Image (tube, rainbow, N blue to C red; front, top):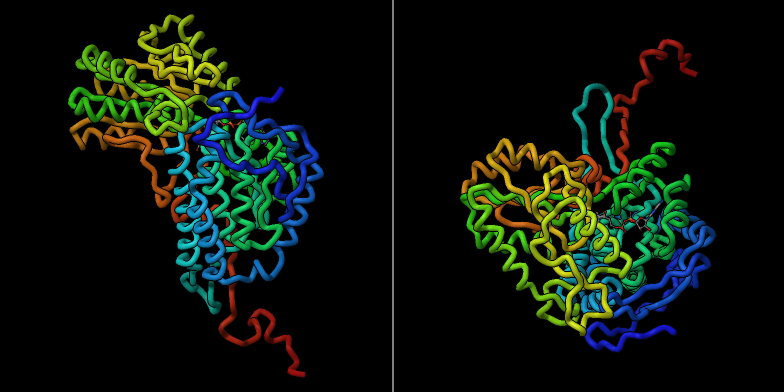
Length: 507
Ligand code: NAD
């Protein structure tokens, strides 16, 4: 029998599980999706996801809505108003969104509230970018006025993961709509509800029907349809590296642009001259916030040899003081994982690390607290004693698991930090700014944090190197990813082309 949550804090009237297909609320005809509250295993909703037929209907109505002059011919400042209204709706509903997302993902209410407000900021930012981006009059080299104008691509598919849905949805949907496209959003099956809530807010904000659809469903069915369909002009994907690689292959076949925001195994680096208090707090936040379910999690910690024996035990003691608890408790720092299956995957990684010879410094098990027994909890875990070539130093765990390694000097550090398939982020802790600058420039990565970690700004481009992905999101140029450039030449002579002018008989 299905158990329903008795916990009050994240209780909310959840979306009913109908899909938002071409502006209509419909019961899906695809495979069943079960959304659970991972803090206690109770069921949020069981509903039917989108089938291929549902997806095809959404695509057809997106195509019609996007081509409609009522949308296509809007001036930038007029289209921006839609984004501002959605931003207002997100802000006004931040508390509700936060509760839904906490029920869907098990993230703390504090974190999901911040994500809801950041999503509002993302819509507002891209409305403002849209209003202030200019087309270009290019340098004239002949008797024609030369221009470069930016136009929408048409239909954009946004495929998102489960870890921060409202924020990753907004990061794609806002610039894609601002650019004048229609958007089909496919959220992950472990966290579909908040994306349906986004649909409700977009509908309430008055966006014309068809321009936005939300299609939860199986990646292999509905995700694959969106990637392969000839009417989809771009896929913006955030998720795992193997899925991203598969999408890139399919996109190559269609000659379709894609952006891929993928996995990571980011290094955080503590030099001997770092302020240890700043470094410990930053390293803990970098790996254990969001229960480690973060693409940018600082999962490999490099500590300089001279402080290794003093720094690591202090770090471990501090990690053991982290408050592991229910996501509705304001004191909680480390909540549950998104799903019991995901906890099982994290446990497999840790068991493999121990079998590889890793030493367990703390964690490595579920908490003893009986109040947490029903949830997908796992203690903050720190491992050491393995070389950088060990699997636990290579594979993304996507959970609260940190591996600590010593390094000798800058050259040794750069070699070890770069010896990894991923290149998403990096943190450097030192009081020596020129050194931080040298290291930051030498690490192959998309983002570098110096004496801080996991800071974000929508105005700063984000993306990965190597297996962490390709292309960038956010920033002013983030809008351009959803547009195509068109050249326009306008004759200024009003005279027949000289190549054929002598052929004219003047009649
Ligand atoms: P995933 O790759 O399993 O799924 C991501 C999305 O792709 C889901 O919506 C899924 O249903 C869909 N999908 C799966 N197979 C598909 C297919 N064949 N065609 C089309 N769509 C398909 O990833 P996940 O487990 O949901 O998320 C965790 C991963 O996401 C981690 O690797 C994490 O690092 C990464 N991530 C990256 C960033 C970033 O910005 N770089 C941010 C968050 C998460």
